Length: 322
Image (tube, rainbow, N blue to C red):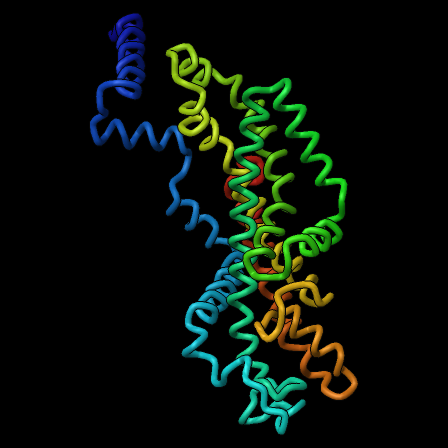
């Protein structure tokens, strides 16, 4: 008969050995794999497989893949120069020459749609990435240090959140200008408060856990604790919200361009195309269809992708598949 006390002692020794190895002696390949699996819960490839099991996520992946391909290979896919005016082809209906028609200046609508995907994706992804970086820095600082830093930083975030996103974006564009990089900066600033709030709430919870207390007691500096332990354990909800925020950023850029304060012509943007189509709707109503459908599909796809990531990364929602 096995000695239960001996088994318990053996388990404790194994746990101690793993703990010592984690902070000191290098782990073996098998132990490292076990530790990583236990710590992260699921790897990147496993997450992708789980997401791809959902029907709506597959649809989103197809749409976003096609959009990325169009943006990357725009010079080879676009049949015409998207900025070259041909007044003699003004407001041409869809035909074998212009598959989606031509706008008021005779520019090919399909070429402008393909090049417009570049602007929308660059502004959406880069703007949200900037918001995540700034929000993580602010949220981790506020959550870890608390007191003075928490009050100052989070009250500033509350002040930014008090403005509607579009109104704040209009004010910032008026200050910075309407270049692409400025629009990215505006999207980043507008999106920073929600990231800071999410990260701060996660940090307040994670910093009370035993492994954080252990590395703090071992004398690890705050910057190491933040980079190696706090941030990696707080990023799951941010990743989900970021995928949803890209859709909002694309809509924000389209709204600014539609109002005439976004990226300036002749740079093709989906919002700018909608603005031009709106001005000639009575003469060429077909011009509103392609940019409107592109915005709708891409925004919907990012929303589907965010919902799928949420269902996979949140254990409470496991089993609910779209």
